[in-house]
Length: 330
Image 1 (cartoon, rainbow, N blue to C red):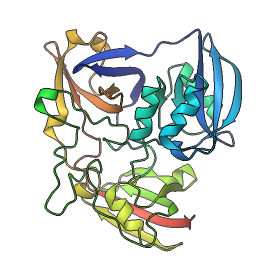
Image 2 (image 1 turned 60 degrees about the vertical axis):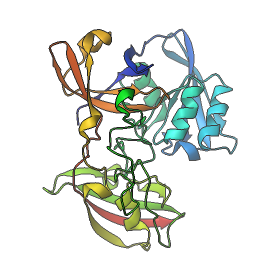
Image 3 (image 1 turned 120 degrees about the horizontal axis):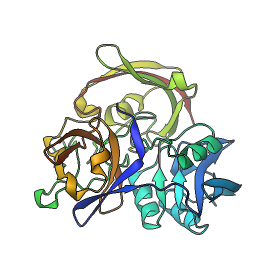
Image 4 (image 1 turned 90 degrees about the vertical axis):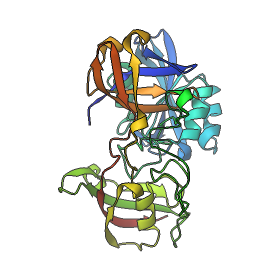
């Protein structure tokens, strides 16, 4: 996947797109990071603490750890807004929380991990990659191309009545929706549904290429089974697993990130996007719909004064394989 350029955000207002470049060197601002023992906590809605940094002239002048006051998800936006926080750095985050934060005037940079001080330093230097990651994924580092994963569903041409880059959201006869994880989800059943699980996993394509692994990161993935935090096929696979059990699964696109939607590829006149001339083919940038929800797109072409974006998830249309080990049931 092309490296995302976190310094560029595309914002759509009144069904138009505008490129907004994040400015360095703001005179004064506060940045909050989901915090756990010096590291970026990976689940925004469940974080118990934030580390809040005060910035002046693009440098950290002070920091403090504050409590989330026991609230979760969208309510956390109020906690941060009360402290005049203007940017949030986190791991995974859902669409509802992104909406609440955006409405509070707080920029969201998701998909971060590791040392919180380093994450803030990278942010200030314009080097922090915004993975657009939310809690609607199979594992770290993969945006669901959609929909909670920060993919602000609102397509790019209201007249065409598009809602997102996944295709139709009309339910199938089986009631499983569009199969990309953004629409209706068929009910997950099993002894682990509703419980917090910790799993290790390795994901590979059919040719054996590894695209993700919690083993490589040295810590298991934690999520609530059946809560929509995972792609559908992964959720179903772990619903009846026992601690210590290892399972190999093969997922068709409908159980993973869905099929590519040709309607998710759209064209914009470069002249309508100040700064678009600086973008290159293969570059990944982030869009915001009219609801303030960010989602990643890839620049697939630039020619004759037109720039073409693809909002399909990078995994759309792919068959995926996972080796899953259930480590703990919390």
